[in-house]
Image (cartoon, rainbow over all chains, first blue to last red):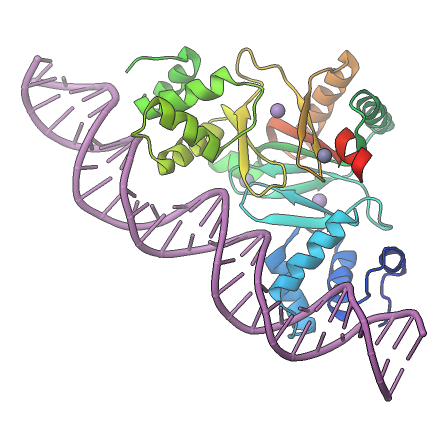
Length: 154
Length: 154
DNA sequence: TCCTTATTGATAATAATTATCATTTTCATT
DNA sequence: AATGAAAATGATAATTATTATCAATAAGGA
Ligand SMILES: [Mn+2]
Ligand SMILES: [Mn+2]
Ligand SMILES: [Zn+2]
Ligand SMILES: [Zn+2]
């Protein structure tokens, strides 16, 4: 099988996982859209366009697998379906946080961190890690509120 | 109807909502357990013990309502069910963030913020608010990783 | 190419949440 | 306190995201 994302494939091989067509299609979709927040269904539909044989169950299985490996991050924005995006650990993925509109569900990414923010976050992670003997792998930061559009209307 | 949580009741009256028995029972449960993360089912069971007539649908409706009003915060820790807790805006609710174990689902609250952290968070919220014309009401901060127990085993 | 076995896709099953609707409560008005 | 319009409720059915099952398939080492 052709290896589209060498870094991910190497990790899979290292863990004894097989590089399958379906997995590559899904990884490719996620890799090409680092700034999107796809639901399982959206990923299924895109994968289906590339290879109509792909099943829904396998999409879920693959997403779980990748999340478990720390390659993608599973998150919920409150609309009932989980969403997935590449973690910052992946190349080409700028680290970012989210603004979530509780009115319309819109999600804004923001990547503008000050050095101060980055340092503090790192420090906090380190402290928590030690205090609670907790191995921190990543974090989810969401600011919830009302977006520009909804603010005008409401 | 007797008003158990005056502050919440005032807000409800102001918005033209009715102070019902079922709502009071649910608000009371949440108010008394500011540090817990109850699922809808857990709240239903507790409410049911107080008043066996209360229905599951109304629990969901009330939780949605309170979340919409900003009185409680709806969050997901990845186990498929939403969880609810009083927002920091409520009295007696110390603001806190979460450590979530991706292995066993355990959730640790931590409240130990440095002044530095608080200030920075406020500053960031203000900047984002202006830049994106986004009215921020609260935030969710989760550090994901492996807890002490799971670390030993795994 | 062959063989073992991880993985897959179709499908059924599960579980959380939401919609429906007749009945009950709330509460402003009398 | 009694009245009545409207909001809210509870039982139930319906929906929807996710998971389990299992025979068939495809990876990949030999
Ligand atoms: Mn994002
Ligand atoms: Mn908490
Ligand atoms: Zn909005
Ligand atoms: Zn754990």
